[in-house]
Image (cartoon, rainbow, N blue to C red; front, side):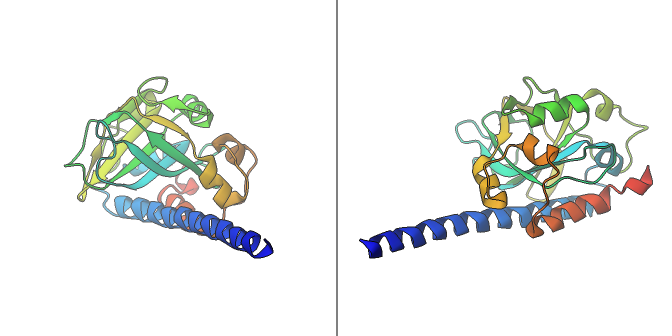
Length: 226
């Protein structure tokens, strides 16, 4: 009996460790997505819009079928600033389900990045669940270098959305997808089933594995530029 309980305990630990490894791997992938996108300023997210964003959501490497009718699912992280151009918070795990994407290349692996541009959008992100293009005003984000003089998208939209597939990067139109906290992944990261709001509002200490993602965002949206 004791041997059986011991094996069950070891098995449980193994499952939890594997889950934590998956989450940490996803953090690494998210950092790589931000780095690669911002390394191509002529084709990436405009730096001024990233600098003005209240929050950023990164969903790395959604597999074939994601966001196509009948199979739509992705997991990633959200990080926010409690003060305008302040430090980025510890990342909160999120998942996105359902809906459709207006920009899609053959159903290949796709990275999605969302910029939350104002307080209202931030409030929606902090909720237990909201529908992109429904409760939240989402627009395809402009691509290129500095765009302040060319577009007022950042002032009008609550959330700007982007997608990258097969190396091609563009703004996308999200319709009907739901975004919510991933409390299971937060459990793996922080040892407790936390919501996005709890992680951001309590100034949760970032894990060591989160440092690359936060560093990439800090380097590409420095406070001293404002």
